[in-house]
Amino acid sequence: MTEDFPLSRRGFLGGGLALGCSAAASPLITPVALARAPGENRLVVIILRGAMDGLDLVRPMGEKAFATMRPTLLQGARGHDLDGFFTLHPAMTALAPLWKAGELAFVHAVSTPYRGKRSHFDGQDLLENGGYSPDGSMLPSRDGWLNRAVGLIPGADMRTAFSVGQENMLLLDGKTEVSSWTPDAKVPLSAQARTLLEKIYTGQPVYQEALHQALMLADEDLGDLPARRGVRRLAAYAATQLNRDTRIAAFSIGGWDTHRAQEISLKRAMDQLSAAVLALHKGLGANWKRTAVVAVTEFGRTARENGSRGTDHGTGGAMLLAGGALSGAKVHGEWPGLGPSDLLEDRDLRPTQDVRRSLGWLLRGLYGLDSADIERVVFPHLDMGADPGLLA
Image (tube, rainbow, N blue to C red; front, side, top):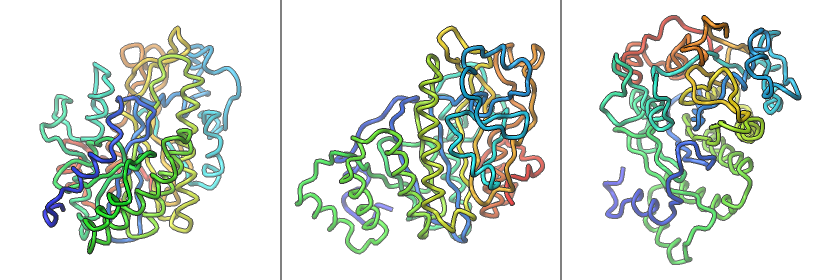
């Protein structure tokens, strides 16, 4: 995409506006990626960095062993009952109206094929790359499954894929080039520098609009706002683009690493996730009914709480789904139980489903991708199995 310009947009904007890379589990806001595709269906992918505790997001209160495993973390408000067995975390009750409307769902006991070391960086790379060798290691190609998926959608316009934010996302890397810029709160740009940028983008309406939106975000002092407001504004920006010709958006939310004081740190992260989903719901308006939002994380956390009122790195977790394109309110998946013989290595929720399976069926249902292409190109070595019925 940059071959028409002597000056690389990625280099110029990335150098002039960059905040720098955050740590794997940082609560800082990371890029928003947008891509155009034909049709009216919309997909929003949210990467939850830091390993979200799926057992706390969707609590199996009907499981007798659960309360004894988490004697302190379950104190206080019980949250919103979902189906008599699972309960939504109290910090997520703002999303309860979506559940009532059939526009919120979850898939429990899911994970990538990543096992053993439980490293944030490795886990996130594997989640975003999405391709695994039979032994569970990531494929040599350093590209992202969403980038590969966009390349398979008939009629998708590769020139309209771009990202907004402060660090690279492997999810976006690949043959479909992604230009980027950062909506920093304190953009050190003089009037002359802004004029130069505008000249660079002359005759390129996609990038002129992108620059305009980035500078608007910068002028709003995003960096000085609480994280919840920052996430909400970025989600609202994505919704604005999805109401135009954008059909796929992706961004990440950090702050999910809850080794200690989980009741405080997890609530903060859930506030951001709720704010993002509600901003998308509000911003998309009538287009919400044609939208699926999916939030995924690198792995789950231990079934038992630790001595610091937190949880450690685990395996099985949960994914969140929202949007009017869903088939209804449901906790999908095969629940493995939390008994002594049910846990993985006597510590983790045992995964019963590959998280990529749900992602694959969303791509198939929303954009008509062939199952064989999803299993071969988007998520190599994946067996999609039967349709789990996530979409209406």
